[in-house]
Image 1 (spheres, rainbow, N blue to C red):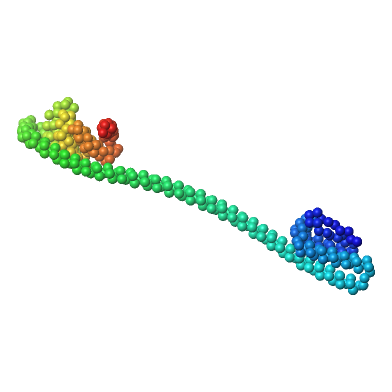
Image 2: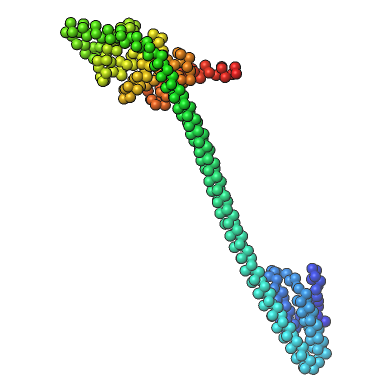
Length: 344
């Protein structure tokens, strides 16, 4: 009897062949099992179909062994050999099927690996795009904040210009009122000035000396510094009446305003400084005249009008010395205003 070998895992019986034909058949079975499962050395794990085939082969082997031992007729032996050939062909078919399945499995593994690589590449691109979107959002946020700040600044400027416009209108009305109030005093002085001019002309004619513009201007400055304000005002008025288009005319007009400012006649000073601004639009004394107008209104207690004029100096002449003085005076006005706000 052939010796049987029992595997521990599935306890399937496999005979050890005694003839060359049996050895070849068993080798074929083992090759099919190994090729189908892809396993290395050791016994393969057989499916139910393989197990049934092996059992049929074992049965045929038993019949062959019986025939060989009993010396049965060659016809039975030939039949058995044909059955073995059929079994061999079936096993070849099964092996081919398993080979095909294994090849398909390897192709699927390659496809899965490619899909995994594509997925990782797509994730990297998504991460890069997300970072770009984050940078764009941050830039948009920064630009939005800048636009908001610019809008707020524009609104503040518009509010300031609106207030300045209304206040300047009030300021012009105030100056007109001052002109009317001072007009009466000016009328009284006209006769005196006419008399003084006549006297001056007589003295000039008698002495046969005609004073030059520079002489009159220097004389007026000298009298102003000596605080001879009446004489200085008279000299500058003479200069303006005789040389109204001279290059120093705006300066002479400015010093008239300074004379009335120093003597505390702030309303008259405002009017004289206003002539510098209106009568000499191209003169270089406009910043100083506007600044002193603001100081004069402050002396009269008109803080609102003073603030408007000082802000005008800073806005129209930002690089001038008068703008520096106006900024300092505005700071003082702001400090004076804060306690009043708190008391409210």
